[in-house]
Amino acid sequence: MTRLVRVELLRLRLRRAVLLLLVLAVVIPAVIFAARVWDTRTVDDADVLADNYYAVDDCLQHPRRYGLERDAPDLQVVCEEMVVRDYSLRQPLSLASERGGSGLGVVAVLVAILFLLGTTFVGHDWNSGSMSNQLLFEPRRGRIWAAKATAVGLVSFVVAAVVSLAYWLGLYAVMGLRDLAVADGALLDSLAYGVRGAAFATAAALGGLALTMLFRSTVATIGVLFVVSVAGGLFIGVLGVGERWQPPKNVSAIVKNGTEYWVTVPQSCYQRRQPQPVEEGSSCDDTRDLTLLQGSLYYGLPLLGAGAASVLSFRRRDV
Image (cartoon, rainbow, N blue to C red; front, side, top):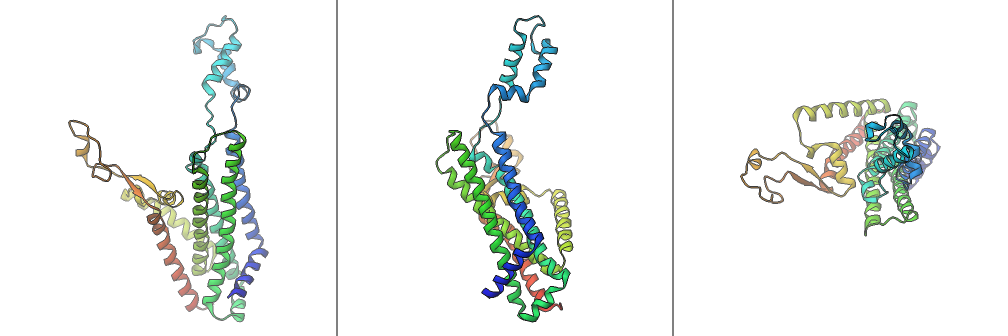
């Protein structure tokens, strides 16, 4: 089995499309990192005036809109001071806020890219006909499937974990250079966030592999996923299903180690004569907890089902 995994790892390394996807898995999060560092850079008056020069010009051209007289002394200085006051709203870098913002973006990028990696890798075997040649050297199909899944899972998790941890450590380093305070445990929480995101992205890669081994076509896998995503979104919207069953909310539960979602409460909760504290978990509490386990089951059960169907199909159908 070890020899088969090593062969699959070598085939992964030699596949140009896979290498391109791995490069994108590094470059796109790096761009997101650079954008966040730039957007949260230290604010000074020169930066604000340079970014909002049009507001200064508008103040000089139409001073009465800003409560100033056209012949007011030092109109230029007054307009610049007003613009600096009104536009100095850039938020400082914060690990906690990034876990709810750009961190999810990095996870989404890794999920999409690694899903394509899994489906592209095995899809090439079916499209080129090399799967038949592989079975000549190893007729036990279950071992072939397991070797491919192991190779894809290892590469996906290592790449996703390295990228995710580098992202959070990079933000932490930038905060240190800017002398920004870091809350106790914030770095550890962010690193754990990155590991959970890497695990979810790895599951996406294995899902792409399983579906492609089932459908025997990369195009079919992507097409089915697209149809299910669109139809599933419409179906959820038509039925009016609550946040508990929304895909993005369950992703948040996984990467954030639990989250909250909104529920509709009885109308009687709003008809009380005197406001009363709402007990947590009561019928009038409009929030519920969505745990890591629940989010994992939401995605894990379909993944196990697709994997089981893929293995059975590969072992029984003619190649």
